[in-house]
Amino acid sequence: MKFERNTLLVLGLVALVFPLLVGNQYLLHIGVMVLLYAILATSLNLIVGYVGEFSLGHTAFLGLGAYTAALLSLRLGLPVWATIPVAGVVSAIFGAAIGAITLRLRGPYFVIITLAFAEVLRLIANNWVDFTNGPMGLSGVAQPALLADASPLMAKRFYFYLALALTAVALYMAYRFVYSNNGRAAVTVRENRFVAQSVGIRPFVYAMRAFVLGAFLAGLAGGFYAHYITFVGANVFGFAFMISMIIMVLIGGKGTLIGPLLGALLVTLLTEYLRELQELRLSLFGLIVMAVVLFLPNGLMGFLNHRREPGERDGADRTAPGTQGGTA
View 1: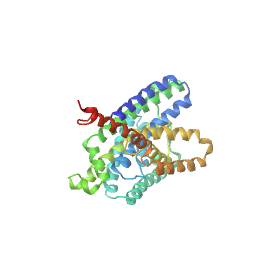
View 2 (view 1 turned 90 degrees about the vertical axis):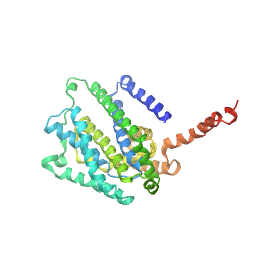
View 3 (view 1 turned 135 degrees about the vertical axis):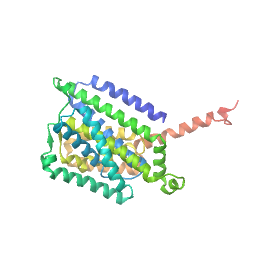
View 4 (view 1 turned 120 degrees about the vertical axis):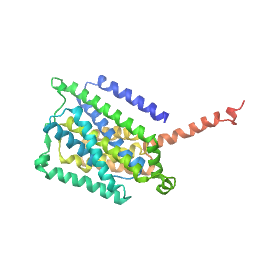
């Protein structure tokens, strides 16, 4: 817990000074995308890492948030400060509705149904032309008024700090959940559902809380994405976003707070570095995931925590009463 807090503090300080030291719009864009994916990976990790259910439909909440923000901006003229929170709330409401159905299922049934919900929403967005503009999508999503006279570099810096603020909110909410009774109950359900029920824990209730929180955070990311890209199309429900989120969680380490951040950083940088490989990039990511599953089943954070444990145990032994280091 202390290690996670210290690591988050260091990462936060680096992120705060990064835009001030970088004057390249492309690098700032990569930084924004890292933070966006960090929010998405953190939201998915609540379901995959702490509840223990493998969802393939998390893009449903990303897409709902993006379309909500875009429609509120284009149809009602609401500013970004209003559209992003509303996008999170709308996604959370749909998360509660979808979770009420899917969380009663387990294993492959849960995976298939969540994927089906995302696909249904994609088809609706692609065919409801009067509302979503169909395949043409929603373009011209408004940017904040304070950027009207700002230079492109200042605009990138603004979006970086906005993404950083949303990432901080996501991490704070995830932290409060994980280290609360809700989080401990969810982990108990993940480890053994029947033992959890025997001690009075209701698996559906705690899984639902994690599911709704994950949907809310994904909706926030979707709302930010709509304003940052200024365009929303049905592809936001696509499987490409889902694959990226899964890879980030697996590589970074599911069931940890820092793991999704590391995964988002590594995968985003690799994606940009290997962009010229095009189709081969997906094959390479597949090989990376296979290697992680085989050799680092708990991800990078699981490996780091395992390397730290012997030293921590030795330190505890030296200071424990009755040991050589603890006797007078």
